[in-house]
Length: 415
Ligand SMILES: Nc1ncnc2c1ncn2[C@@H]1O[C@H](COP(=O)(O)OP(=O)(O)O)[C@@H](O)[C@H]1O
Ligand SMILES: [Mg+2]
Image (cartoon, rainbow, N blue to C red; front, side, top):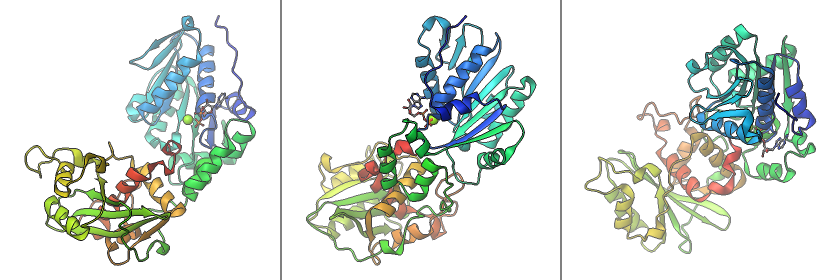
């Protein structure tokens, strides 16, 4: 017999894991304790089972599953009551029930036998196929399922399913937890919410902390770009000139950015057709002869490229051609995910003073107005002949922000 005392859970968490309904679906603020409380549920369901039965934890990507696996392992303090298999991410309890931690990336891996309980963590970021597979797996055993996640727009199966459950669907119970609920229960700090409100785009903040869908999430990449972001810019020699490169074969681009007096400026966006990195550097040197450069941009430019001779990469050439010291090279290790990137870009438009020059930064203004994202959140680039789909100027802007202003928001907040 396993000895077990349920840890302390605030009432709103207890209500969800005690619910008698076969299915529960919870739309909750980030950091509400969704994962923690449902790990407790998984363990309790597994303790009620018999040898040969299975309990599943599923999450959209492998890394998230692994986090939950490690949390459950830490949670069971007596090592004699379970066996862990690190390579399979399973935990076998003394009663013979196996708890599996699975990624939902491939729905084919979500068919199985004798599954009595399943958690779908971050279900609004999973494919609908994953839910179909899990549902068919649960049919034979009449197993239970629990959905937990943030609201993530309204154009997804998870949002529709939550609405059905909310209206009252047999065997289902719907829960909603806002940031205020979590603060009242002492799980979330008010300071953290205030900080998120100051820094995140409003639509993203309302969605993450209050479960209000972000309908503002149109298909425009820069949904917070406004006419007020356009105005005359003068290059200020007292401050560094940030060069942010984008290395398409054609055109090759460099965004010129400055940050002083509480404002981020783009005085110029250089875009050259049928040219190369050497000519681009020459132009930069002649236009900005007495300025302190900081160079960066697309992280992939560090790779060796077929376009470039010998053992050089783009950044080595830039360093040589502009005569820069190593401390003037600020290329980031890797480009962030597009989702994090889009949030940062719009957070800056909403909460920082930003000015782009109407004459010399025109390509960037154009991109901010017209570049669109696909339903998967990728920048739409299917037709490079369509100017609205080139997005090179926008690329230089987002690379610059990733490099110099990444800490403006805590990216961990954004999934
Ligand atoms: N019942 C609880 N007991 C102890 N800590 C909790 C509890 N609920 C939440 N927390 C803490 O709050 C933080 C967020 O919890 P987590 O489960 O990751 O939230 P979510 O999955 O909703 O984003 C974690 O640091 C966790 O330890
Ligand atoms: Mg979680």
